[in-house]
Figure 1 (cartoon, one colour):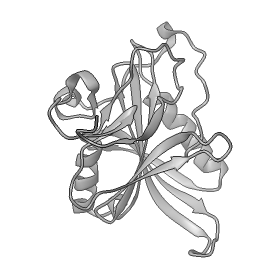
Figure 2 (tube, one colour; figure 1 turned 60 degrees about the vertical axis):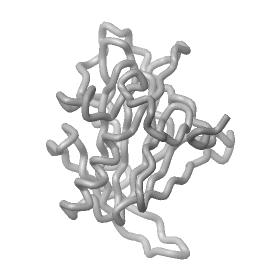
Figure 3 (spheres, one colour; figure 1 turned 135 degrees about the vertical axis):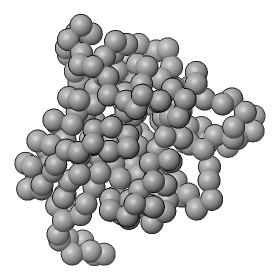
Length: 205
């Protein structure tokens, strides 16, 4: 799902509590201020990716606007779609966003359950897929994970082996925790996508 999250017009005081691993600041996902500055990250603007063997990166572009709306990573026979959103300074978005995802999956005819995962609360969903040239219509498994950071929220959608295989799941969870979010100082409404751009190679001028 790459659609923009609906804009949150609630005041900061009404924002729900943040949902994040207790060790997020030291084990990730990281804020730009917490990341190791000498590591060779792939710079995508609002998100930075640490390269690793076997990792393939692709950018998902919104056809109507031509803007990059998500980062797709293929790793360990799995896929990880990433989106980073602006969030209130004092509250988080993941608790409310899970409710929205749950409703959306059910409206599409899918099934979803909430469970406690290594990254905190997550959703395991059976999502309907439309028949295409390369696949038949049916259901696919997806894990929706999310972490609230300082003034940002990082959402991941995990597919493939990491929805069920323990070893693949651990590798993709480690990948998710290595992500760096660059919120920037520009004022943004909560739930607005943090802008992404084409990658800047490490060491480029």
